[in-house]
Length: 139
Image 1: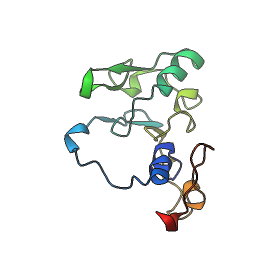
Image 2: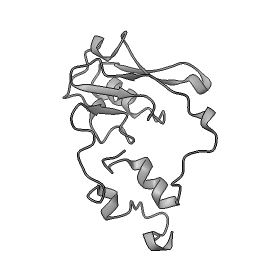
Image 3: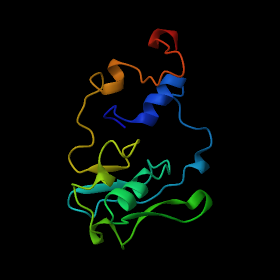
Image 4: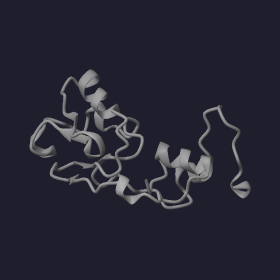
């Protein structure tokens, strides 16, 4: 994510994965749902972690998100025709920035506000205490 708050992007930097895949057919183009007045669902970013589904079901008790499709066509969908038809609200845990690790579900107007160089993982690498941290000059 351009905001630098993406866990997946930070881990990719840490492991030295900075190029796109050489298998573009493994990345199908999925729909972007901006029908809700406050929230955007960009399923092209989704890594199918299921955090939004669990947060919506277990914490918010709304069942807004679900998996739809099978195989390479599997994606996160909503329990209505589009996001505007659901009862999702800005206060729901399912759309919290900490829930989605890749910025698939974002609040309109808040997604990309940090300039390059000021992003969270531009200043310091992600560390989980598992692997030694490489300095950017070593990569």
